[in-house]
Image 1 (cartoon, rainbow, N blue to C red):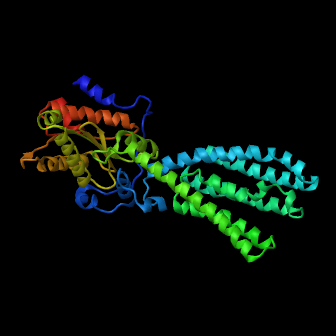
Image 2 (image 1 turned 120 degrees about the vertical axis):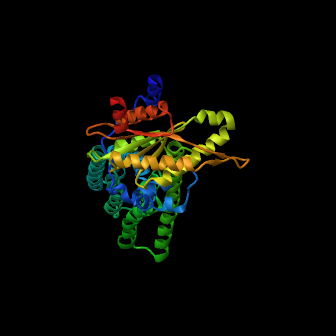
Image 3 (image 1 turned 45 degrees about the vertical axis):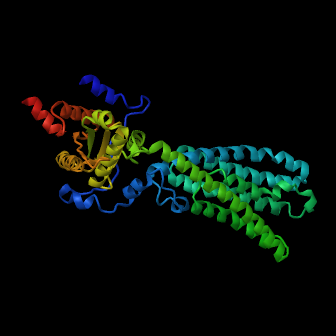
Length: 420
């Protein structure tokens, strides 16, 4: 028994840090209305559950972040933050260096004014990079992203006004191409359609303002300039959405169990790591299907897979949308129940185990294959990390297996058995 328990605990990655102290979720009340509560619409977790599928790929995913899980938002934010920080740092360092070319191509008066504008832009980009470094959060990225692209556009308008009195053939083409270069840089980020449009509009406003108020040209030349800008903007937006779509695909493939469509162990641990540092109560239930190897040996792995899919579906249907359900490995499932105490968690576990046993798998010859499970139920103790809670649930589960299987064992049951 000890070796088997240890093997289960050793399933954790060695480099995973101890996990968290609580889960940030709204109080769901007691289990007297559990049947209604678990079917009640809950925005955050309902969207969370619907998002973790491999085949779900709809336009709404690309339009905005409303249907994205918190975990994917955090993953995408981390991805964007790294690229945005490098971009800000690169241009913060390189923009002042190019002032040397200004003194070659322009008179000293204009070159000095451009140097001031370059220094201001560089300082602003340094500030944005520093903000990303010390506060890499979703709100920070949403604030920094538009500014990181708006600032170069303001620099573009300022620089073009500085050199406006010079003959056009003396102005390097790189100045006129700056708006399109900025749009090209925007294509490096996996933004949603709405997010990309917001940034593009932020870039477009100073561009049109300069074209309308500071350049005396015909309406057709203005239309041509705007059309060219929108053409580059469309290509940039297409690149952004393409990156987002690919990121979603890779994310789903790496975080969702392809058979049961439940989140995997890695995501369970990461969700716990990213939860708040509060001390809310939560209970943990660990399910293990009885004699599952015998099912595979006698009926084949196809039937075994069908059993796993059926059990995963039952667990999800019986629990609340705010509960976190993961395939822990093999025939084991873990459910985390925020704001549920031990006595209520045991009742829930009994209900789920009963549903599993009452819903047999129908085989090809129409015979019924009854499934039972051994279950360990525990409640997180104050100051306890998730590793410790999982180990205790695993101990209770194997106690249930070694004492006849097809039963639910919680902390109180184990203590009474030890005392007896």
